Structure formats: C-alpha cells, structure tokens
Image (cartoon, rainbow, N blue to C red; front, side, top):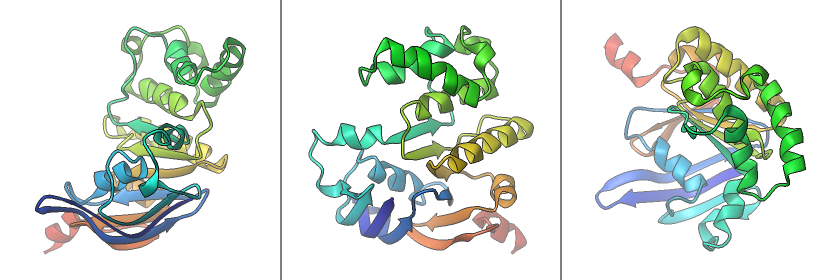
Length: 232
C-alpha cells in the first residue's frame, strides 16, 4: 500500500529523512511518533507528494509517487483522506455542506451527494447535526465532521495528523474508537500523535522517527523520548 525504499529528503543543511525504508500494508493502522522536527511531517508530505524526495522510491497503491507528473498528483491525493488537529472546516457551510463539498470538487452528482452524505454522517455519529454550522459544534463533533469529509470519497488511506490534539481525554477516546471502526472497514490509517496514552491503549503498530531515521517499528506500547529523559 505504502512503501518507502531508501528515501532521503534534506532541507539545505537539515535532514528531513535519511535512507528510510518502511512498508505499510493495506489495512494497517500505524502510529507515527517522534519529537518535533524528527521527520514525521516530511514522511506525510512525501506520501502526498507535497514535497519530492531527493533519493529513493515511494510507492502508494502500486504507483511510484516520485515520478508522478503534476497532472497525476490530484489522482493520487483523491485516494488519500486527511484529518488535522485544527479540523479545517468551512465556517460558512453547514455540516452537510462541509462533507458534500468534498464530493462536489470531484463533480459527483447531487443524487450521489444526497445519498452518501447522510450515510457517512450516520457512520460518524452526527446525523442530528447536519444543519448545524461549525461554531455550533463541540470540538469532538467538529472532528467527526472532518473525518466524515475525509472518508466520504472512500480513500484507500486516511492520514490523521494529531486528530486528538485539541480534544479532552474522553472525546479523544471516542474519536480513536471511530478511527478504529473506519480501519476495520478496510481503510489504511497512518496517524501522527504525541499521545502516549492512546498509543498504549490501542496496541497498534508504532513507527518512531528521530532525527530523520526510523528507530522503532513494531506493535504495542512505545517509550517516548521524553519518558527516557525523565527516567534518566
């Protein structure tokens, strides 16, 4: 599904990633962890071809990303849903309209939109909020809308960048349960997080990046760098 082979990306004198190789299979749920500046954002941006690798190969859904032309990039990104910490909803559109907008940009018919949006709102548990605006919703409800928008076009990969960062622990747990439900439907999930409690509870695969290198890649709990420093 996603395969990095000896990928290097540098920014002048700073290393984003150096000689990174990793294979994420279809249906995986992967936590991407590491301190600020470790290379997590570089990893995500390379998948989306927002930046280009200096060396190596990146395969997404059997396509070599590094050689895609500008015309081919939109097709790649249509296969990838993204969710962010700050929700990024359109403030002057209702919940229904926010989710529908992701279909409209792909020129889906009004009939398809009327059918699919209610189904997705039901899946994420906000059917009763369809006519509300973002500022009328709680943070957890806004994140549910963002997730609905990200998966409305059935992406093969969902990238979640600190999706629980602005949420209280109870709401964060609910969002993680929702993401696990989406994963069980077959969507590959790559989630960037600093939340140790979530990583420990979910017991999924953890890829840790530090100074541009993968230093840990296995299932289960992970001792974050801050903890090691505290223990010392």
